[in-house]
Image (cartoon, rainbow, N blue to C red; front, side, top):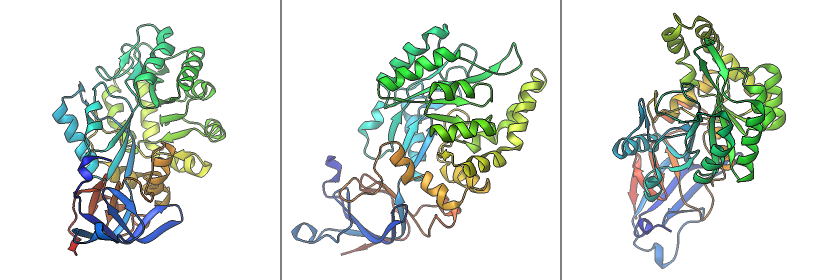
Length: 381
């Protein structure tokens, strides 16, 4: 247990404490950094300061597509990376799957007041086939399996590849990797106990990705009905990143003169983005919540991303579950469990009924410490 838990005040959560699907309680306590469902008693509870927070508590939110340490031009310094992590934390995000970053952010693991990071290492891309300064560019496509092995060994159980990007000679999105190398690379990741996720906008890259056995798709804007059925059959998760897809019209406008075919495709995907996500949900695809913060988007946007998913037609309770306890389980991290570390967010009313509540958390508790106390917190006892 962290030394920071010494002399922490007891936190009394009163109202509703959501523990998972169909599992909630009316009261819970945080004692020495850990959640307990029983009222503290005995000598250790006598005279200890207690902070009571009235509201609806949920397990800390998860952003599965976030880039801490990445700015518009590539890696950023420690101060800016810290500000990014704090923005995510204060928005209620206490677990981040860092979906590719050129910066070394291992120092964050030493900070008890920042979100936990699950890193996917560097983006793996090819020269001139991704945003400059963002990824690890492989001059030879044959180096993909070895690069995946290296990123798997230095990451936290995930590897991120860029599967498609604009090919300026073609004037449209095209795949980056041959099918046989993709299959070999995915097998290498799995042999090292890592899962692999892929950036993909296009339709053309998807059949090879699915046949190779990727575990997750980022964006997935090009999925056809037949490919969606295969995604469901294989149990592949999809992170729609609707805030990023909302920028497709702007991106199309920037390239329309030189690359009209590409621009037209991006505009089509932009126009059907809500319909597309609704179809994914209706088909039974496991949807994850990711903002694509870092680089071109700011941090702390989880409430906006959740609101976009609801606008697309995904029911609010499903969105909250995907942004919290279900995805914690998917990533192998605990939610709110008795006697485990308390990482939670408290809201003034139930975000399972009103997604807009997510924009204004009352309190954020990280590893048992109140880092963003809310106005409804009351001191007692």
